[in-house]
Image (cartoon, rainbow, N blue to C red; front, side):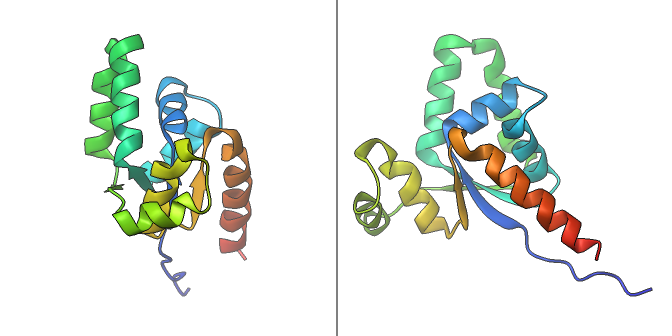
Length: 136
């Protein structure tokens, strides 16, 4: 029996809300995205701005969860990305000012999908279809 070809994981840029929700809950789409990243089915791109935001929010509101986030950063194969000035300029043309750091990181890292908290379920549905197609 021939082995299926290994495909590159889909590069997905996630925002701080997805990281926090996924770390603090063992259910839901945000958590599923983090698990898929841990399994190597997704290549998580984390904007440095999002990592800093998660650290600030956890320190202020849930300091007991801060070590969990740091362990996640060490254990999961991911790409931290600091956007260049060129990436930021491109993002300014496409997004609201508050979203520029996240979009710029996604652009600069070559992420295929940007996943803010409000569309994470859409990504899970796409991944389900992708995984189902591997079996055919």
